[in-house]
Every structure is written in structure tokens, then in C-alpha cells.
Length: 154
Image 1 (cartoon, rainbow, N blue to C red):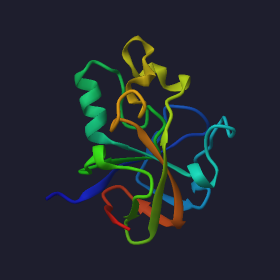
Image 2: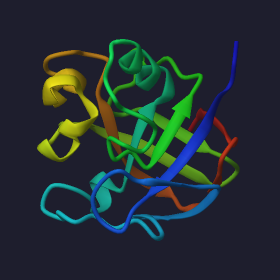
Image 3: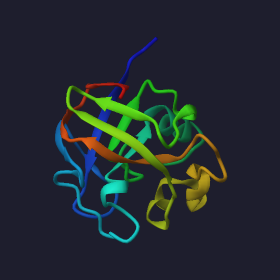
């Protein structure tokens, strides 16, 4: 069995796509250097970190969608995780310090429609395509994460 890992860490100064960093500090409010343009719908303690699966991104690319890691606004792109089983309540340890708890599925908004053929952002809606959604997590234990860090049950 392959250990899940951090494939990419993504931040932006507001909006998408988010751009890769090799390392990031994580606080209860999210990743340092990451800014959300729309704080009504994004960010805050219960939406501090958005995560998505590299395997899902690659499968979407195979369908012809122009998505790539960070394009859909996720802060952490993971690899090696059974994404279909991810659900609110799951806790993960990222690297030696950071513990996250999945709080909710992330509803797709119009700002990521550029990631999809025919601007069909609902392709990653949990309601329409269960197991394909990004997730929001709250930070239980802050710290530093690095690309390549293991992700273990928390």
C-alpha cells in the first residue's frame, strides 16, 4: 500500500489558480501567504485548508478538462489517497506537525469554471458526482508542511 503524500502546496494572493510552494506554514486560519478574495464563501477556521486529489485531477484531464494542480483553488494537492472514501470527520496528520479535520465538501463556484469543458464546474460537485469533490478542513494542530510529507490518519 502506498502512503498518501503531499504532491503540491498551493497559495494565491486572491483567486485562482493558486501557485505552488515547496513549504508552507499552516495556522488555524489556513496557509500563510494564501489570500481569499471572497471571504464570505472561502477561508475562515472551518474552511482553512482546501484539499484535492491528484488522481482525480489526472482523471479529469483524461476526460478533456483543462484542470491542473492548484487551478481549482485547492491549497493541498494529495497523492495516494482513496479519495472516494474521504468524508467530513476524517482527521489527517500532514508531516510531523499539522493535523486537519475534514469539515465539509467544497461546493464548486463559478470562479473555477475555466477548469472544465463547457465551463461545467459541477463535474466536481459532491451532490452531482459523489467522491469527486474537493474538501474543506479545519486546522486542529498548526505547523509546517512540505511537498512530499506523508499524510497519515490523525
